[in-house]
Amino acid sequence: MLLVSSGALRALVAASITGAAPLAIAAVAGVLCERAGVVNIALEGLMLAGAFAGAWAGQASWLVGLAAVVATGAAIGLLHAYLTQIMRMDHVVSGLGINLLAAGSTRFLALVLFPEGMRVAGLAVTPWIVVALVLPPLVMVMLHATRFGLRLRAAGEDPMATAMAGVSTLRVRLAAVTISGVLAAFAGAYLSMADAHTFSSGMSAGKGYVALAAVIFGKWKPVGAAAAALFFGFFYALQTQLQIAGTHLVWLGINWTSPYLLDSVPYAMTILALVSVIGRAQPPRALGAGETGL
Image (cartoon, rainbow, N blue to C red; front, side, top):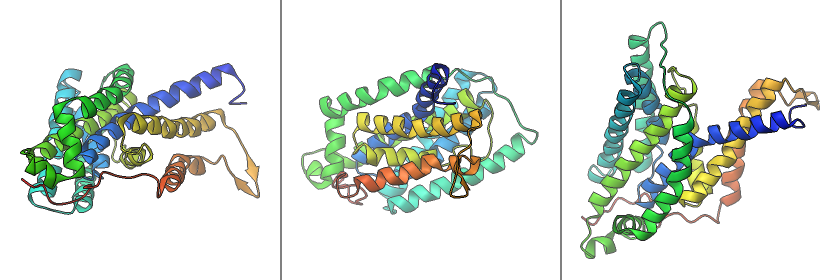
């Protein structure tokens, strides 16, 4: 009943695009960071922090909210860069620490600041869709046709050779991770400012990890990562549309359209997608390496 009417198909396509928009922006953020040689598991925490900053400051105005999102993303991005590039902390440990910090701090602050809930007027989804469409080709051109992009790629492939050529790998990585933080926080702001119009603890719900999977599935290319995000966005939309339609499919004694089972579909597809690229996707050669040369 769900997928045979044109109205249902249009709703599915529209939901796929809107669901994929924040994933695509976060995935491109991950590409920028990882092409520079820095693993960015912190995408989940960055999205959650961006969602909180947008909801909190967005109560004043959407412009103030977006400014807070940019500042929050830049600060956390710089923190990740500082821990991994200057303190030489393991990139995965730094990212997981930021995710835990974002989850705990936003939950605490939400309880303190919004004990009875809150409502932010927010924005339409259109700005996020426009950014999600424009950003991947722009970043692709930047990576291949600008001096900063060439240096960023070189830092992710061979930081020592990059340093010997007179380029500060450290500065390039600091800039790349900071920009990545801003974009990931902006992607998270979609959740509170354009989708839910409020903030709730853990509202990113693993989307940062799905975006990271899109980076790998897209083979560390911005357009490929955005296309992978659209693939995952389709399954988010599909499980939602199936629940709305109240579709029931029982087989082998299992209700395959149970809301609990449907909620797991996007994550199951993420695992299948990652398994399908094992051995075929080649990350930047210096991804996760500690040396910067300078």
